[in-house]
Length: 159
Image (cartoon, rainbow, N blue to C red; front, side):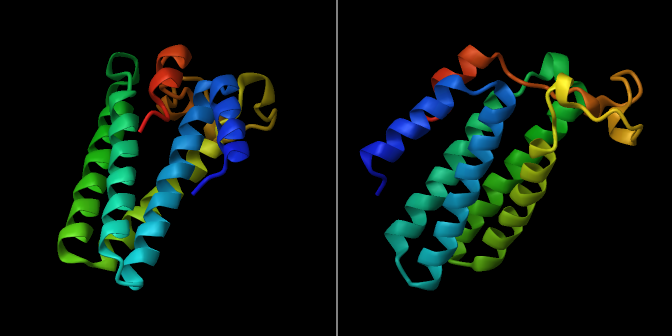
């Protein structure tokens, strides 16, 4: 269980975070829940495993509902499909009491988390040319599709 000091710190981070940081926080929380689910599975603690899997699913639902499909186009659609796939894998892990789907989800979360962590604020973008620094018209990945910060912040950690 978290202590009140950690809870206050987390609440402060959430309230002051920009949308990119909020997404990163959700990925971190989801990753932690999946890791805990794997640990509980290995130790035979069914209720705890199920609770962590439910937590991870709730975070994925939050991420999916925060997508802006109007602005995000194909990227947001693909993320929605990926979040749905991960939820199905988590449910499979819970029903079959299997570690493989959890490991699969953990790998996907790791990849997504690294990608989001690499998104810099416009003033922090590197000057050197790279495929990731192309204008939005050339590269849809260069402009993240984020929810409105205030709307997202209200729901982000209310599980």
